[in-house]
Image (cartoon, rainbow over all chains, first blue to last red; front, side):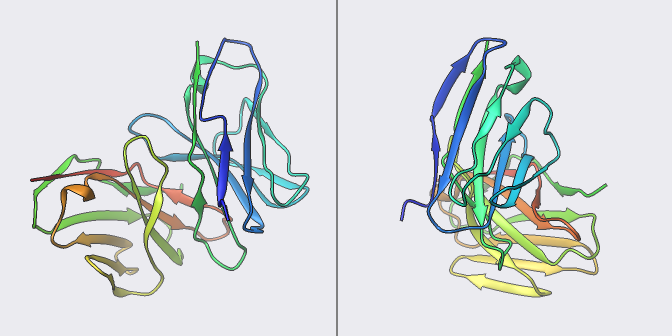
Length: 112
Length: 111
């Protein structure tokens, strides 16, 4: 049982490039989340999903897109990278029976 | 606006002392409250959850909840240098499918 996994661990992008951050969980959790964390700040919710085929915006969705075609996977897409998207990105998941979220190890993204 | 407030710190305590971390929240009907610990460069990990008014103890950690005052705290007894981390308070607010996080309190335990 690997829990929540994220790839890549680190990535450097140039302005205007695109990339997909991968997130997978093997706990059969319905809910999945994407957060970003800027230095010295808390977690800001980007997007979340309550199940396959259902996604919704969080607090800071601009510049990002998501899809949820399976229960296990919840990729986050950056279409036109901007320096403001330099951050650490965390994926999390939970079951529908509890609010407790379990986090992946994170992806550190730098946009230059 | 739904908010979770924490003192950013840093909070420094000597080894063996009690560390007290505080959190206030804006939504009166919040039901679930969490403390996460985050080491530098790592992801948040759950320390405690609390749902009812009063105290909940788990080893050296005690979470305290006062819904009337919209206040939740975390006490760490016999603080160890390994407790040095940022502690995030998280609250589930009414009608939301997600948690709202505070900005965290950075704790340093001095040997």
